[in-house]
Picture 1 (cartoon, rainbow, N blue to C red):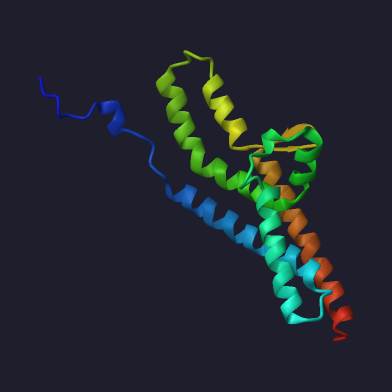
Picture 2 (picture 1 turned 45 degrees about the vertical axis):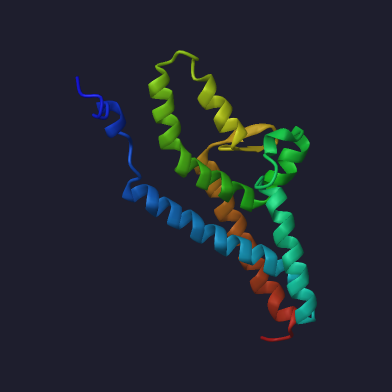
Length: 170
């Protein structure tokens, strides 16, 4: 018996596919546009460059709490989760986590062979906020993507209307 061979089930793990990479690129692009637009909408009213830079830094740090990067959102009450999930950056984070972890979680669930009835994977999905909860309901990944896209379009339109008025350009 050869103890140095790797069992077959470990060599057939799901690899990251091209479609996963393209999904991640699209989500990151959408998240970058959305975050920049939201932050610009807030700092557009600040006249001094130094004040704008400092305020932008504070907003960036605060957004880490809102998206659940520092403290998982499931630790908070439903009301706080809903407030945090209104911000599209939380949805972007959820989508990225979904793409990165779904294959791993499917593999773990398959290896457990239903022993726990899927409870371990369910707990991990909840702990890492893989689905966005808005008004006490779970949003699917496609609904989250639609929400973030619509939010981004609305903010970009608002910037297009407000920017010329603030800086008196036409």
